Image (cartoon, rainbow, N blue to C red; front, side, top):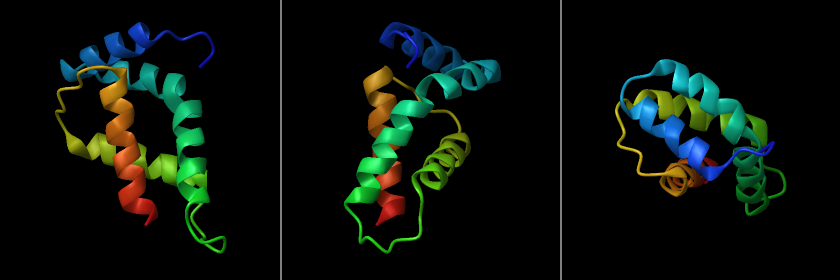
Length: 92
């Protein structure tokens, strides 16, 4: 995550909680690589012929997060847990 601290991500999540849309724009590139790796792990559990790609799965998670509206993010771990759950529900 290019030297990004968990604290920095948590700060951006709190700002997003408070309605700062710029916080989401700043957060996205910071968490993308970790979300992509998570998507790869999710995809590896599926049948080899599955057509969904990790990049598409990350993009769908992003769209779902935007649609969720107001979420009271507790911290970085909570954010990634919700993202993982979104991935699992979509990848199945």
